[in-house]
Each structure stands twice: as structure tokens, then as C-alpha cells.
Image (cartoon, rainbow, N blue to C red; front, top):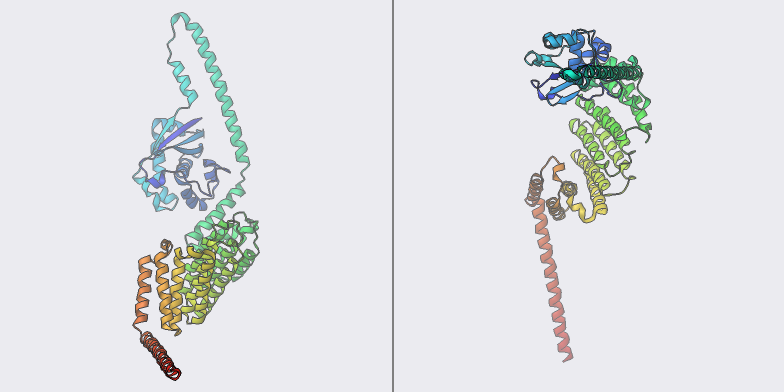
Length: 512
């Protein structure tokens, strides 16, 4: 059994590492020529690309030496790859003579046409070098042969050497038999139909991620027949978007999927991963301007997050989910879409309320109320906006106390509250006090890196709003009215004081 070392130092860095992917599952089936041979030709382009440099070399050997069998690809150094040859064919003799290098590099140069991928054109200028690596037992034998024994002990040494070589052959044969047996057992546990199921599922996911919706349909439809019940909704949602892109009926798949997600419980294998996959799918819907399903899928991910036990880490996920939902309303401001977004934001806040009470939970709820208020304000529902902003401030103050001032949402929500109050005609002097409070809170906040605006940008916005308020006729009128009121109060107080003084003087005169 031989090992071959391949020099890959001339390749780009991204090609020098063996990829560990969902396709080449080392715990199920190692990368080997038998595996490549069994992949249907239509699936080879995407799967060889996913397998990285090891799969590329394996495919080149399969094309050039179909009778050879190679396996056990792994990284030897940063610039070298090593693999095992189990069935040699002409491969080893050709490597020894130099023919193998030319033949394999010629096949690699043909990869752009063989696998319909222009990225393989790198092999037209990058030549790989294949060299044999002698095994440890072979080295020992070769070293033994170079010993020149003393003539007096030649016969004894020859006997000893013969016995040693015989022992080495027995050990090597035994080792080879054992390795072949282990390989046979491992291969027998991996069925071709299992491999095709894996490949079909991953090809469908890959095509979906690349936006090749029409091409993904047959793979997703095939996968639906084999994946576990828990994964069915994810595939149904992907398939629905693919069918939509082809102007085919798809709503039934969305309805079925969302109904199933609603019934999912805490027995999910990976709650966080499941929710993240839903968000990934929702973003695809949003990108394709399918806004209502996008909102519903984002909300579905929130319902999955609500089942997690990682209570201290999941709240930021809720906030991100609400940010995604809000972005849909910003893209599509139709009445029906905005109404749906308002409804789902409210429902997510209600999902958060029964969860463990802590600062992180309060921050997530505060974010939800801030988003709600902002959307109400943008669509002219100012009283509801004021109510939402006030609720967010109360939640943060109650849960965090003085620490609430470190939260940028605290200052921003206060700022938005002042804006809404000014717009409905609240007392400008009262609005002024709230704006000044907002500015102080924004100055004390420490988490601005989580926002699209910097601290300086938000402060300038708040200060501009304060200046606008103070230059408004309503503010000046209110200010004049307040001064007049104070003056009148002082006059009244003075008159009352004078009357009291006069009465006191008259009383003194009467007494005297």
C-alpha cells in the first residue's frame, strides 16, 4: 500500500485546505474514488466543488486511472496533501516514471469543461507535483539491504536478515488484511441510497442559497420524502419560494409549514439552529419581495426562540428578529403590511413577557416598544406611539433602574416620545424637559455600537429637535404665556401683600 504526497503550494490559499462539509461526511464515508464514482454525473459539479482540493484530486485520479482506488485524504503540511493508494492499477508505475504527473495535470486542466465550472481554470497555470512516500516498514527493509556484513558472520547475518524480512512481511500482510477488513466494514455501513439522499438534500439547499430556484425544485421535492418530520417545514418553505419564482401554486406549502412550526415543541434537536434557519429563509422571501410570508416566517422564528432554555443569550435574538420584521414595513409601507408588522411585533413582546425577568429581557421588550412606537408615529397614529414609548421607558426603568441610562434605547425612546408629544400639540415646555432628559440619557449610554447611528449622530439629531422646538411659535407663545403668568402671579402676590400691609396699618391705628 502506497501513500502519495501532492504539492499544492502553487494553488490559491482557499484551495489548500481540505473542506469539512455536509457532503463529505468523514464519520459516514471518507473521500475516495469509489464515492466519486457513485455520484451521479449530474451531481458531480457541485459536490466536487464542495469537497475542496481533496475531492478535485480524487476526481482527477478517477478520470485518469479508473481502475485505481485512493482514500484517506488529509493535510500533511500547509502546502502538501497526502492520501493512500489501496488499488494501484497503473497509477504507481506512472507516478514513478513521471507520466502520472503529466496525465493528472492534463485532467485537471480539463476540469472547467468536465465539471462546467470556470473557477477550475486555475489548474491551467498551477501544476501539481505527485510524489511517492515510502512507508515506515519499506524504509526499514531498504536500510537492512544496505548493510554489508563481515565475511566471518555472513552466513549468520544472512539467516538473521532473512528471518527479519520474513517477520516484516508477515506483519505487513497482517496489517494490510486488517486495514482492508476495516475498510470493508465501514463501506458496508454506508448505503448508496443514503449517500444520494445526503447529496440531494445538500444540492437542494445549495441551489436555494444561490437563488437558483427553478433548478432547486426537483432536489427539494425529492428531499421532502426522506427528511425527518421536524425538518419538513424548512423544506416546505424553501420549496414554496422556488415554486413562486416559477409562478406555480405555493401558498399551501407555506400554510402547512407555518402550521407545523407553531406545533413544534422543546424536543427540537437544535432550537437555536432551527430558528436561525427560519430567519435565513425569511430573508430570502424578503429579498424576493414576498413580504407577508417573510413577516410570518420571522415571527415563526421568534416562536421557536421562545422555547429555548438559554434565557440569558436568546433575548438579543428576539431583538434582531424584531429588527428584521420592522425592515419589511420600511420596504413595503402598504396598510396591510404595516398592520401585519404591528400585530407581529406586539405578539413577540407578549412572547417575551412570561420569560425570565432580567435586564436582557427588559431590553428586548424595550426594543419592541420602541419599534412599535416608531411605526405608529410614521403612520400618524401618534397617541398609540406615545403609549408605546411610555411603556418601553417604564419597562427599562423598572428592570434596570439606574443601569437603564447605559442603554442607548432608553435615551432614543425618550427622544421619540418627545417628538410624538410635540406633534400632537402637548405643552412645548413639557416637551422641552423630556428632550433635555433624552439628551442626558443619550450622553450616558454605552452601547451605541449596536445601532446604525453613532452617539454623535443621535445627539445632533436630538439637539436639532430641541432647537427646532425652541424656535417654534408655539414654544415662544407658551414661553410668553408662562412669563405673563409668573408676572401676574407676582402682581397678585404683591397686591395681596399690599392689602395685608394696609389692613395691618389700619388695625394698628384702631388699636392705638
